[in-house]
Amino acid sequence: MIETTLEDFRPMMERCSNCLACKWLPYEKIESRRFGRNCPSAAYYSFNTYSARGRFHLGQVLLDGRSEFTEQAVEAIHSCTACGSCDVSCKITRYNLEPLAHNIALKERAVELGKYYPGQKAAIDCLEAERTMLPGERHSARTDWAKDLGLKDLTREKAEYAFFAGCQYSFGSGLAEKARFWAGMLRDAGVDLGYLGKADMCCGGRAKQMGFKGAFEKQAGANIAALKAAGVTAIVTPCSDCYHAFKRQYATLGLEVKTLHVSELAADLLAEGRLKFKKSIDMTVTYHDPCHLGRLGEPYVPWDGVEKKVLNQIHTWDPPRPRYAGTFGVYDAPRSVLKAIPGLRLKEMQRVREYSWCCGAGGGCSLSSPELSSATASERLTEARSTGADAIVTACPWCLRNLEKAVDENGRQMKAVDITELVALAV
Ligand code: SF4
Ligand code: SF4
Image (cartoon, rainbow, N blue to C red; front, side, top):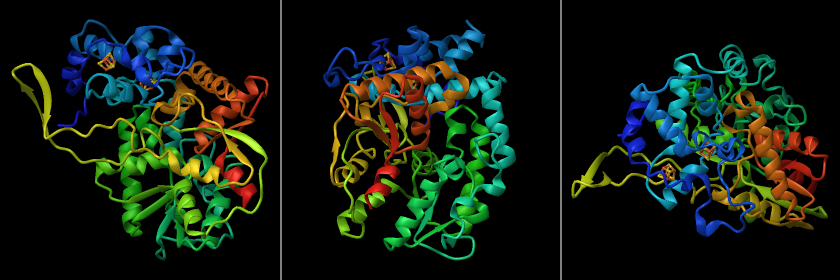
């Protein structure tokens, strides 16, 4: 049985061993004490309730009626960036528990009880009214980025791939041009590409990360209906949140669609010689793995089993439960695209791939816990600067926005750039 309600997680709350491995990288992966921590909220608040272990305990006392959804409890619940780093450490170090899914179930219970913040409500209201999580934007302007590109409108004709720009790339100043670049570049490389036209809307993935389960399911239902009506079988997106939504969240709702990040398609086109970099970029960069493209971007594995006890003591699942420990996320494709750019040098940070430190923008934390969000991005910049790179490059618009803000707040000591900018300069 897959846990869906807070009550379903009670056996995990009881089995959590209080080992606190979820606050650190798996020990053999720690290169230095300075960059050994993994949980942004535990590191920022420095109090156990803000860790995955602390939230298991909080869930237990709330279910037992030994505490209530106080102001402090609600802060601890909503200040999880949904980065999934605790999941990786818990699975590798201890048990096959699901701390991230439990954190989200806690958020869902808080939301059911009306315990959320005004910024979160504004985003959800906008999702309902304008089909985007970016308050102030209008659905009528959503696909302006595609104007005169000559992309197929999939509500009228078929194409091999649907290009799904996502909210940030559809509206963001300086980002809409990047959606336009990717779509035009892929089309010129011979990819049979279309978009959903007036049926294009938010994937809703952030609503789920924030605990607004009903809003997510409504949005996902609308998208699934639109994709099925258009006969879409493959999606390519430049957004890591959209990638995670289609690859993992929608899969749990029964949508089977091949999902690629633009960096994966670009890496394939480079290997086939259909995309070539002609210009050199003399720069040293370090790559930030977005959580929802990396450790949370693993393929969905259907499972419907039961929990069992062996020798009346050892917990196990029959059949064995899928173990999402981040191993099969998207890590190599963006790196191979960067390495193919002439003149560009790539230097790695200490926390990379499934052990990457979050940018701080996940889980809607910039709306619920802005100080945590800023501190988490600043920590990533400190780590990036320690490599000696000129710029931190990422493959997600949410990461980019948060890192750009941190660059401004930290005296502009290095740049934050999107992989799109580098690809556009090199072609
Ligand atoms: S690593 Fe897992 S078992 Fe250990 S305290 Fe954290 S959630 Fe509990
Ligand atoms: S999902 Fe990230 S922020 Fe939330 S408890 Fe786990 S490691 Fe901490």
